[in-house]
Length: 455
Image 1 (cartoon, helix red, strand yellow):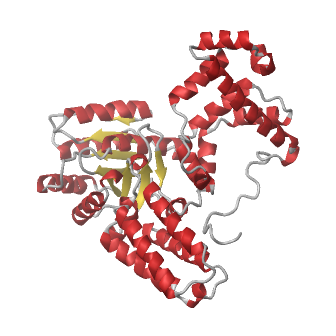
Image 2 (cartoon, one colour):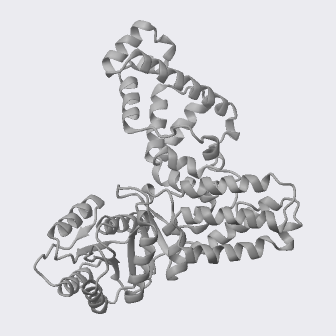
């Protein structure tokens, strides 16, 4: 997400930082390039104008022009205005009502509404211990009701039995009664969608809203549709007064125009981002963290949160002990790769680490499932002794391992070279002892408010 915009802005700011002093013309020339970058990212024209007016007003002020680092000061202004544009901070769901809290999920057909409903229920169950009952009101497409039942079961949440012949208002009232009687914390309502906004759809949604008085009405919008997503958000907000947006398919959107436009155009916050197809790929929308990623400054807080959520802490502690004892073997190498895979794709992780994305530019960074499985097959084809003492692997043993894993001797050699490099790194870390990188968690981690201010 934001790859196109991030690359364009990086080029603009590289020129700015290379100048010893700035004047109004330098800044205006740079902002003209920023304008083109935003338009190419499919940001709404109204949003681009308002954003650049605020940036220009601040950037040509005395504080910037008289600064010792004017280029860096301009970048700081852009960062602050990006955060302001997207809503300052993450806005959580307002569920402070007598249970069950009703949450309506609305949106066009194909936006990922049904899957997102299950993702949200799973997240609320796992992070906040809130039990949800899910119900589908899509009486026009029985397959949609079956889909909700399927993804609900995968998420480990309860789905109200489908009623393809009922009326949406009747179905939702029955579901609300069932949620009350079952002691559920929430009722998540997966409403019907259309290929486009029409009067029949809106009238039905208004009737459902009136029947159950939801505390949250969340628009599920497809990020890949760019400005169309903004237009849809405005239409739904005008009729239903939505309380927030969940932006889906962000992993396939290199531009990010919808994320930068929706808050300004509708006045309503983006509350979550869908970042993949699996049910665990829903994350809170943090404007400050996203602005930091756009400007190539990484997102350490999200990286730490991802690690805390996905990594097996006992396994991590075991690996730490192995590192300290400089006894890091091929079994540990495999375990480490599996731990990293749980955290997501390497390209996503690299986006979160400050400076690494720029350093890796132009180089392939993703390890696909086939590569991981090939590594697993090679290591598992070794004897326990060979995994511990890789120097035993002579030519005949390598041929045996290659045959047993369905790979080539070249693949085995490539893996061993990779392992030796990793082992050397682990030994260096082990020598740090109690000052090791992982000792005591993440010591000295800076607060991630503004990445351009010291401390």
